[in-house]
Image (cartoon, rainbow, N blue to C red; front, side, top):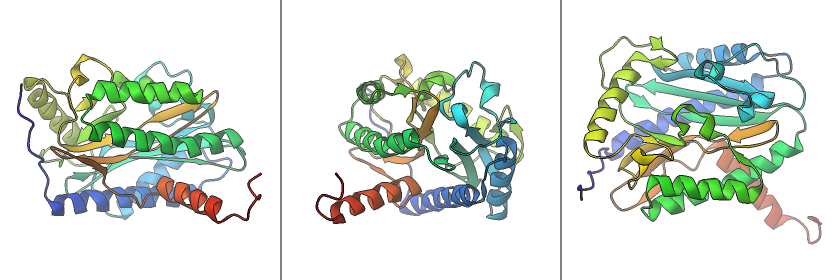
Length: 289
C-alpha cells in the first residue's frame, strides 16, 4: 500500500492561498454589486478580469466564467466551448454564477460565486441547501473516505433534495481538483483553451506524478479517484440544479495526513448561511410560521 504523502505547504503558504481566495471573492462581490439587467456574460467576465488585474492578479488558472439564467444549471452544454461567456443578457429574476481562478505569486485560488437579480425563490432554496454539501464533503473527507465514495455521497444527497448533479457536466465530471503553487516558467497571462500556459505545465506535471502513485489530482467518480484524499489543497465545487436554476460554491479544502478543514470560513456563502441562521434563532416566537 503506497505511503500517504506529506502535507506540502507551510503556514505562510496557507496564508498566501487564503489571501488569494479572499481577493477572488472580493472581486466577485464587487461585480455582483455592479451587475444589472442588460449586462451580458462577456461584459461580466471582462469586468471581473479588470478588477482582478487591478487588485494584483498576475495570471489565471483559467479565464473567468459567467453563466446567466438556465446556463447556471449548465443546461444544453455539450462541448467545453459552451462554458465560455457568451452573449446571454441578464434579466430580472435570473440567477447567475461567476467563476474565476486568479494566481498571485504562484498562489492559486479557484472560486465560484452564485447570485441572482431580483426575486427567485428557487434560487433561495438551492442557496440555503448548498450548506448541506459543504458540511457533508468535509465530514466524508475527514473520515478518509475514497474520493469516489465522497462523490457518491454528494450524489445521494442531491437526489434526496430532489435536485440534479450539474458538476457531472464539467469536463471529466469533476467535483474538484488539486491546487498547488505554480512554479512553471511559461509566459504569464497567456492561455490555451481557457487555461493559463503555466497552469497546463503545472497540471501536466502533477498528473504524471500522481498517476505514477496510483492517484489523480482530478476528483471525479471514475477509477482514477478510488483513493483517499491526497494531502494538499483541493478546489471543491459542488454544483446543483433544479430545472432552469443552478448554483455552486467553489473554495479551497485543506487535506492533511489525518484531518481536513476548509481554508477559510469568512466567505460570502458562509456569511449568508450564518446570517440566516442567526436571524432564525433570534426571531420572535411564532415569527417563522
